[in-house]
Image (cartoon, rainbow, N blue to C red; front, side, top):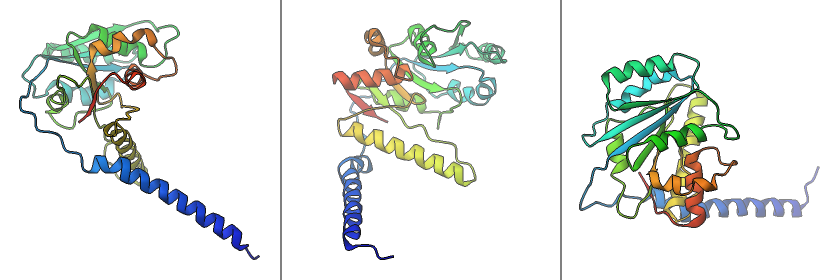
Amino acid sequence: MIIPDIVWTICFGLFCTVIAIQAFYYLYFFRRMAYYHNKEKEVSVEHPVSVIICARDEAHNLVKNLPGVLVQDYPTTHEVVLVNDNSTDESKYVIDEFKRSFKNLNMIELTQEAKMISGKKFPLSMGIKSAKYEIVLLTDADCVPASENWIKKMQDAYDEETEIVLGYGAYHKKPGLLNKLIRFETFHTAMQYFSYALAGKPYMGVGRNLSYKKELSFLRIKDFLPSIKSLAEMTIYLSIRWQLVPIRLY
């Protein structure tokens, strides 16, 4: 079977088009991430922080990961708000045991499902509403901070203009091809939303490592969008839509 020259020409043209699009993304968007450096701050202020975690049937993960959040090296006032979202396992008893040793751990017990509000939106909104401090820092029960300086580094990104700080949530390194593919996909996704944010076109953040000001979420709560999976994503969406909120990476 002989393939006509016109077919080869079309295929080559499509190939060149794809390469050109990829080159554009790497040169225009991704290079911003490659050459990104945090600006040195003349004055560093440590703000009070409320760390918020939503957990449903996460007793095993709480035992394994919660200590990493509770033993953070952060001398400034901070709290950990843990929303126990209708758990049926031993989560409540695990949290109560941690509360004996860590007085800055506050638990919110949810015993009823919120009608017409799916996923983490309702428990997360309850956690933010109960937070004592203006700056909230979000993570998940199945995540552990990369270091004891996590709170310090995330809040240090704030200045007078910044109201949202985007963080990176890496995947645990384990043997196997599947783990490598998941870690690559996680890294590539982060590279995309970080690069777009640096280009002034932010479009997402991950709720396992994200910080913003408490006032920001509740000023826009009336515009709650059912199609958005979480309150964190809703905040990012509205800030982009209205172009009101400076966003910074960390």
